Length: 315
Image (cartoon, rainbow, N blue to C red; front, side, top):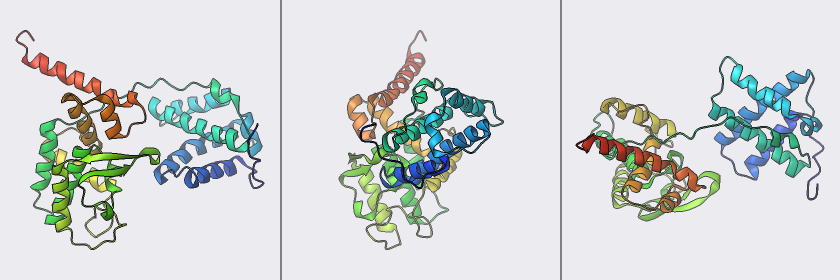
């Protein structure tokens, strides 16, 4: 095809192609390590299945000849195995496989029309599960009352939670901030999914919480170091934030859905309930598609009906 590159001479097996694709995603697309692992976990078993199905090693040159029936057989095997994939996970696996074959087409000159013949499972979009406004404030207040940790750790936990709820950030976005970004005043530039940047307004309550933490933190990191630090001075990780929320929701009797990401859902839902424009919320959250943001209208409508049924005399 026009503009296609000749396959590098070093690619002889299908696994060589997988490694070359992941290298491309790493170096040229700047995919995160987590994304690269997920892609490898999706495409690696797929190639192994095709090899087993054919009973012979799969060469790089064979990748353009994989049939729609073989892809369907692989997807079927992931549903009927001992640990079957959910429809959502199966859809994600097929998406990764298609992405791999698009790369083969565009960069290696190896199209495969069979990919367009395979349909993934129907996945019903999940409704976000935010915490209520009172619960969000309760989580922050409960973190502030912790007597089992050093004052600077308490200040850090409050700052992280306030940042998630006050700015609607993903946990990875909040923890990617560095000391060069501080103090957070007025607005902050966030790099989100797909390396897309956006400007997020910073509320005074968020600025104050971060400033309290900065005044307490005992380490002297460089401007390039992560803003939020763990107990021994390393970077505060998503796992730390998840453990914090697990501890807090246990103390407050909140459901398992009260996760760090639930605070981002709460940010969007509460803005929508206060009359914010849907497209403005889309920009604040960094959603590529408005349809993703529109899920919050379902949450808001459900809350409205619950309030109506509770308050109306005829309910």
